[in-house]
Length: 147
Image (cartoon, rainbow, N blue to C red):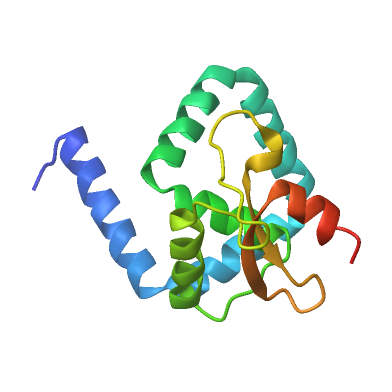
């Protein structure tokens, strides 16, 4: 049976998808090891692409923030040391964060404009990583910042 170039590509794509579905753990391990061995090379490629494609990168970031803002916060909070047991606990924290309108410490209303001292912050214990409350930036920096 003779396939067109387009049909051949489609069959290859489907075959690869089936293989990845059957061998998720193997593929994950392979990619982790590859990244460890080639970390500097991959970072250089990423920096080069970001520099050469600034407008495209801005579009991608904006698109992703609109689609799934909680994923952006999940990465940011995880990077800053917030710990949750599972996705359900994260979604509870996200729900509290997204619905919060006032600081839980001083009761000031959060602003969405450029008033930096009235933006939402996720307060967490820096030793255990556990979420505590949603507070304003002022409380985060001045009241809890000294701890």
